[in-house]
Structure formats: C-alpha cells, structure tokens
Length: 72
Image (cartoon, rainbow, N blue to C red):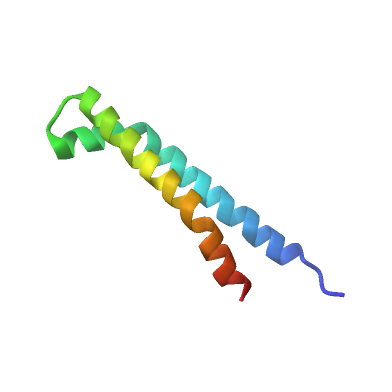
C-alpha cells in the first residue's frame, strides 16, 4: 500500500498559499477598487460586495458541473 503523506503535504501547502493570498488581498481590496473607479470608499465597498457575491454565486452554481466533469 502506498503512502499518502506526500499528497497530503501538497494539499496543505496549496491551501496555505491560497489562504495567505486571500489574507494579503482582502485588506487592500477597497483601496484598489476606489483607485480604479475614482469614487468614494463607500462606492468601493459596494463594488467589492457585488464582486464577492458574484464569485460566491458562480461557485455555488458551477461546482456541481465541475465536480461531474472531474469524476469522468
């Protein structure tokens, strides 16, 4: 029987890099949006909220499709 330790280590390192990237971008996202749109921080917060909503709804809608394709 083969050991799954290298695969598990790879998954943990991948998750760590993903979480670090998310932690780096989230605090500066409103300022980046504000700079791009030229609006106020309130407007940037609204745009950021809509972007997060769009990301979450696309994950919810397309996860079963991608899961079905990966099972093939």
